[in-house]
Structures are given as structure tokens and as C-alpha cells.
Image (cartoon, rainbow, N blue to C red):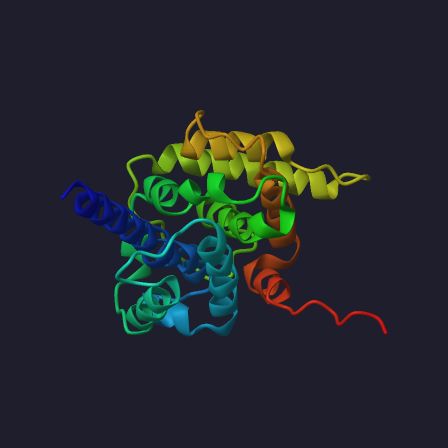
Length: 237
């Protein structure tokens, strides 16, 4: 019947979005900081406590705002199954990071329009992800945490240049007498990597991205993730 067909289409659409945003997205979320921190496989990155806290914070926002349950699978059950698969996955992070610009656009950036408008805390995990990705791409080797090579990407030279311009601007801005945020270069990076058609006008993603790039420049990825995972202080009595 038409009703059954509609339900089936809705179920398929919702399930596909859960697959993209939760399981596939989670792989992207831990791949780039994972490579920077010296992990080799998905299971290794997943076992890193700081990366796991970061992933949980990212998925909490995605699950609340960007996906809907399907009649045959609720969101929490799907997440539990996805996390079990990641925990046992020996897929190399370098394989997850192949064609990174397209994969990040398809599996992570596509949820941005579904997030609440002008909401900094909600978009902050995405800002951390993009900052880790930019750090992964940047050519600067003066303060890398481990030695790694970049995964193949047909646009690698182009997107590395964008990341390096952002990193250089961050370095110059942090060295200035009054700190200058690399807002222009951050915008150029996002549009250059993910396309001019991406509309962030009603989000605070660029602001979150810039803040996290500056944090990573100042204290590297591991300490940035450690601070990001800290619980907020208890309310004053």
C-alpha cells in the first residue's frame, strides 16, 4: 500500500541518516585527532579515554538534534551497536581518513543545518573536530605530537594549503601584542574544503572553530581534548 511504502521510505531514510551521522560520523570524529595522537586503528583511537569523551559529546548533540529513530531501531540502541563495532574494529585510521574532505562533508558537516541556530555550546564539538582536522592537514611540523603521513585525497595539496594558511595566521595572531583571531582564514578554510555553498550564517561554527584552532595552537591536541572533556564546575552554593 502507499502508506506502507511511505513508512518503509521513512524507515530507510532515518536509518541511513543514523548510519551516516552516528557510525560513519564517529569514525571521522576520532580519525584525525587519533592520527595526531599516534593511534593506528579505530579500536586504538576508540580506547583512548580523551577521544571517547570527545566522541560522546559530539554524538550527544548529533543524536539530540540531527537524527530520528526508525520504526525498527531506536537511536540509543543503534549507538550502542555502532560503538561496539568501533571498539572491535581494526580498520586503519589512515583508511578512514582517505578522501577526507568529501567524507567529512557527507558524514559530519551535513548535520550542521539541523543544529539549533546561534547556539555555541551545541556546535562546539563540531568546532573541535574541524580544528583537529585542520591541525592534521597543516604543514607546520614545529609542534606535532607524533610523526604521521597524510591519507590519500585527490584534493590533498589544495586543502593542505588552506590549513597551512590558517595555521600561519593563527601563529601570527597569537604572537601579536593584542591577539588577532584568524577569522578570515578560518572562513576560507571551511568554504575551500567543503564548498562555497555551505551556509553557516545562522550557526556559531566559525567562532567555535577559530577558538579551538587557537586552543590547539597554544596547548596541542591532547591537552585541548583533555580540557574539552572536563566537567563544568559545580554551581556555587
